[in-house]
View (tube, rainbow, N blue to C red):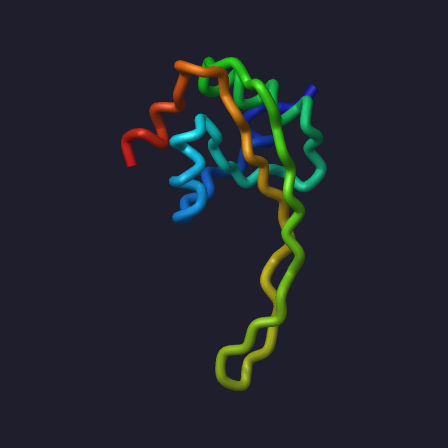
Length: 95
């Protein structure tokens, strides 16, 4: 069984993720090997909320350049987690 703190790596804080908070959806960076049931269990265990649905987005690396240095951004995985009506995650409310 996965440790919930190794499944959820951190919050994603962008304009679109703030708009999703109004719809009871929260966005997290997650381990690339994690699947939807593991993500749902981790969020339920860490934040003590009921998860209604999980959508997963794989992020591909993109080429980046800064002066003469050429590289790529890292690949990863994000999860948009929808919680039950009337519940919220206080971590996002305090930001």
